[in-house]
Image (cartoon, rainbow, N blue to C red; front, side):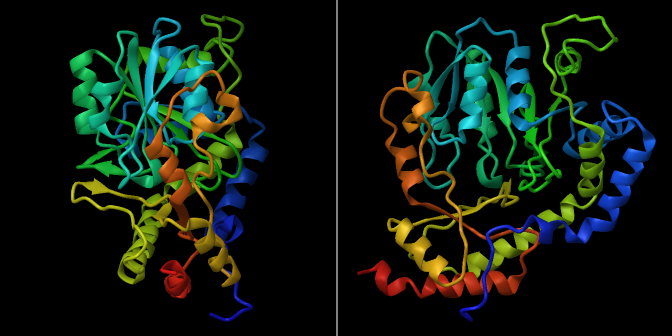
Length: 371
């Protein structure tokens, strides 16, 4: 690889360049309309995204964290209920449980997939457990067949954190449609990313959808009539218009990222642990996470070679200062994943040549990897 060449982990400007004319036209349309909150763009995006996912309702909110908090609150669980959640999830999933007034109970993941291990569920359920909050990490669907069966057996509600799984499927069913609510973030780096913060909840439950449409807007659907204690968490018209542009291209973006993943699978060396693929899972590769025991050395080698990477995530939730007194215990599988994971470039702005160059740089680490 040329020393002058740098492969960014992510360039949002490059990824969005393809849509620039449409994005600018959509922004101009909204600005000229004079209606900027809960208008036609939000309603249209909600209808289009619900249809895409295969859900009856979509409720736009300000961000993915709010989507989770409002959805968990809308379940009307007894305050202080235990909610099962992956021990290696991004901390937002856990923050939502705490903010909604409940207790997160950590479930260890499958090392091969990063996702919640259904086998662990019987070991952590308590008499106070009322729900499971699953996170479909890296664009791979959790085993909702096994998790759903466990939830039904024990009368538990299921909320899905779909922040990383836009368009991912188990069988023919998309994430977000397995539980009571599917919560999406449209943070700019997501496969379906806005030009700022944005989020949504999808559901087939009419009552839940109605409550969420109230609570996102001060508890009100009718001006100055407040039915619930709500918040201000509305998907704004500008972001909805941006998302409508990109939703039309989401399948193309997914196809592109899956093609880049194939290059990795074909050219990465065997001495790194690659993502696991299963026949009935349609992965969308929001993140292409490999694992290696000398992760930090490999990351530095790649940086020296002009390849920028990320780590998802460097610190396990139970080791965060914010979780002191909230999360207790030892979670060795989560700690192992957090110590060994390395996220490689895989965006709509990358091309196959970029991915081949990354693989070449990784092969160059082989001697030090075995020293």
